[in-house]
Length: 383
Image (tube, rainbow, N blue to C red; front, side, top):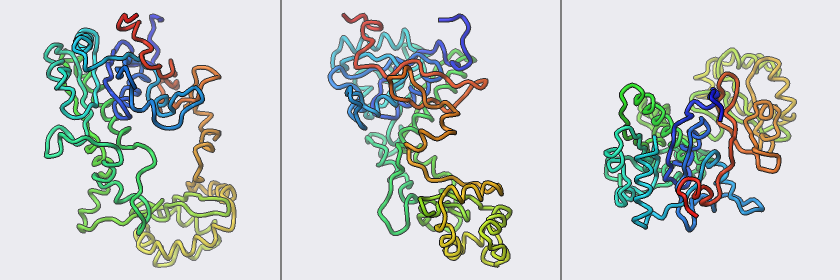
């Protein structure tokens, strides 16, 4: 290890113990680990993290989900049913850890003597982060939860998808990962405060609170006329044109929601007279008459390819983007130029790097996800 800490590791010297499984807590620790913290991941000795069986398995048996969420970590196994191993973990946390993250079922961590009061009373500098389901208070505080439950209960599903069709879940674990992000923000804030006061604290995050936070614009909008919102597919409420349109070889998202951009779009489509149509004069009138507007746009756009319209629109400064598959996005020139997909060596899968850079440099991928109990000897001294 060099004496000079690179700017890409601002959390160098911070040790985090992750008593986590699935997505939310591991993602929080993934963020902290990417920023240079030392992560010690605690797993069950029999099956490990549930995510070891999620997603698709590579030929060597490794889970795609587990690899994605657990880079830059050291892995140990602890049998939390065993009093001696629980005591070892307790002592390790209070003596060696700066941060503890946990997302066990509500109440379980307290039952085994590793709860926030147990540990922070023994180490006043410790920062302890709970990732719960519904929050620390309220009638549902003791309930467990998963990402799709929160997308449903928090209202996100009610505004996602197309009107008249079944509810649609956002295609990524946006609630789990969002909660991990909020946890990391809370932990970093608490670390900053500790520098000033010398005191740690307990940080609480929950899936339900994250689900609510994602709907901040929509929660405000429904209060205008006390009416629930319709689903708009690829579109956005109150903005037009601002959605995916079918071309001859796929879909292209066109974003021309202000009057200047719409006027340019009219010229590109050889219909400059549309800009003077009372139905389309302003963004509000265009959105109010979106069905009529799309009846004009769709028959024209479908006649040419995505790339044809991309080139035409780009030359006039109209934002647009093709709806790409993930494999297309991986090979995209912009993705490649950013270097956000990282490898430890040429034989390993490409892992997603953190979407941050420091002085123009992205934090590097230091290690792949650990095998179950890989670092038991190094950390616990197990033979």
